[in-house]
Length: 176
Image (tube, rainbow, N blue to C red; front, side, top):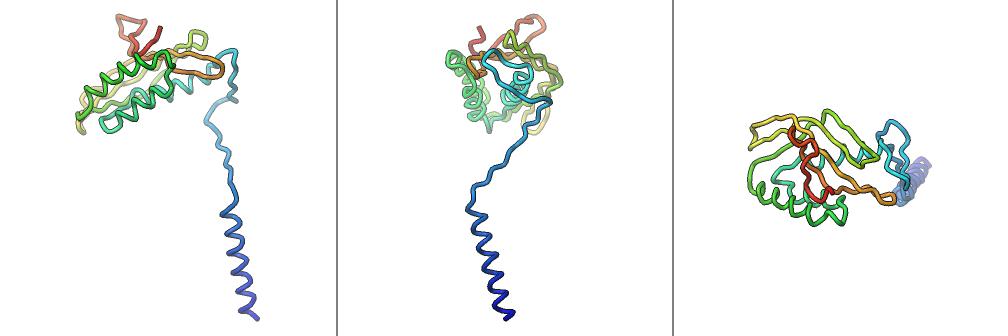
């Protein structure tokens, strides 16, 4: 009798496992935001521009010889169609210069300014350059990003380092 009960329970466990394994599952992921995020065709919100700028800055300013193709493809994927050609030309120069080298760079973000009306944003922080495994420079820098917002789509027009002499900032791509 005990053997039959054990077999029935084992069969029930197997049946429950099969049913559970074949069911679709959904997980709701909560984004890390301070306030509820809403997109509107009337304009880009400050919070949204800030989040996109943060992610774009980390993507554009961190690169190594191992990820150059992914780096360039990721930037071009968020670019406006109008700026795609000029941006690709400028990025290819960087890829050709850095390909086969041991030079990497990473950016530690310390501040950000966003202008939703002007569709620009700036990040400030330290740009680190590493050759091989040795850190060779760590310089404070400011980078400006230029955006286009159409419908509900925010796309990159261009970006560049802001120099002390040129507060307008040079840009890669079509920032006009």
